[in-house]
Image 1 (cartoon, rainbow, N blue to C red):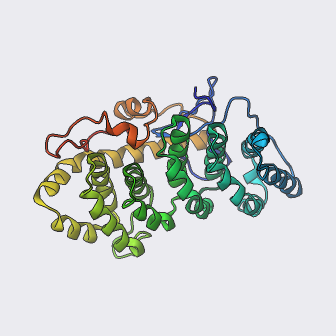
Image 2: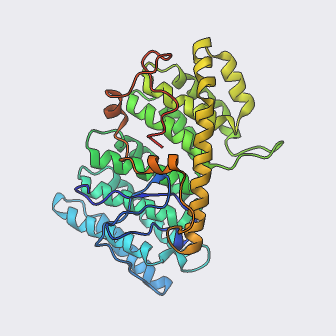
Image 3: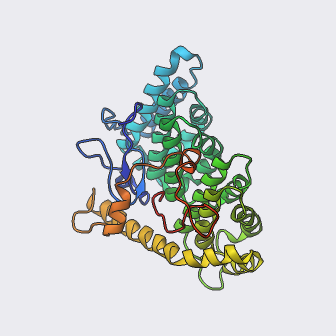
Amino acid sequence: PSPGGRLGRGLPSPRGQGALAARGPDGLADSGDLDVLAPSADVKPLRVHTERDLNKELESVALDLRAATAADWTTRQAALRRLQALLLGGAASLGTDSAPLLNGLRTLREPLNAQLADLRSQIIREACCALSLLAAALGEAFDSYTDFFYGNLIRQSCISIAVISTSAHLCMRALIARTKPDRTAPKIAASLTDRSAGVRARAAEYLELLARVLQRPVDGERGPLERHADVLVSALRSALRDAVAEVRALARAAFWALNAHLPQHCRNLMDALDPQTQRILREEEPAANERSAALAEAAALAAMAVANGGAPQEARPSSRASSTSRRAPPPAPSQRAARAPPHASDGGGVGGGDLSHL
C-alpha cells in the first residue's frame, strides 16, 4: 500500500451508483483491465436522504477545503474523505439525473482543483480518489469537470514522487474512460507538443484512451473528434517525430486508436510520414487491434459487474488481459524512459506491442 492509501485495480464503469468500485477485504478494487483508485479501507459509506442534507454536507466540505494554512491540511484531508463517503453512500442517486449533486459541485470545483496542486501527497491522493468516484457516479455528466481538472492532473502525473504521479495518472485515465470528454481533445493535443517529454508521453496515452472509449462514428456521420481533427492530426504528426523514443511509441498507439474516428485524416498523415515510421506503424497495427479488443472485453465485464451489483462471477478476463491487469501501476514517463527496452527498428524506442501501460 502507498503512504496515502491503497492503489486499487478496476475498470472504468458505466454511470450509476453501482459503478463505484467495490472493495475486497484488502481494500483493492479489481473488476477489469484498467487501473483506478479505491478509497482507503476506513472510508465508510455516508448516506443522506434529502437534497437539503446533501447541500449542507457539500457546503461543509467546500468550507473545509478552503482552509489555506499548512496546519489545516488534516482538515482538508478529512473533508476529501467525507466527500468520498457521500459518494459511496449514494449521493448521486438523489433527485433526477443526479441534479442535486451536480448543482452542489459548482462550489467544489475550485477548492478541489486547489487540492490537486497541493504539495502533500496525501491530499493529492485523496483528491484524485474523490474525482474518480465522482466520475464513476456521474459518467458523461462530469465531462466538463474532467476538462477543468486536466491541467493540474497531467502536470502532477509526471513528477518524481510516486504516490502523486501514480494517483494523478490513474485519476486522469478514470476520468477519460468514464466521462468520455471529447471537449478535452484540444488540451490533450496541446500537451503533445509540451516542452516536457513526460507531459508529451502522458498526453499520447490519454489521446489513445480517449479515442478508444469514444463511440466510433457511423459511416456518413460526423464523429465527436471530427471538429478537432486538424489540431489533433497536427499534434500527432509532431509526436510521431518526437526526439524521445517513448513518446514516438505512445504516439503510434494513439494513431491507430484515432484512425477509427478520422480514417481519411490518418491516411493522409500516414502518406506524409517517412518510410521508416510508416513501416513501424504497419508492423504495430495488429497489436493496436488487440488493445481495442481487450478494452471491449473489459467493458463487457464491467457491465456484468454493475448488473450483478459487484464483480462478475462467471466471466473472467482473457489470460492476456488478466496478466496485464495484475501488473503494478506504471511509473511516470520520465521514470520509465531510462529502463524502456529498445526497439530495433525505431532507434531505441519502445515496441508498440508492449501493453504494460494499459
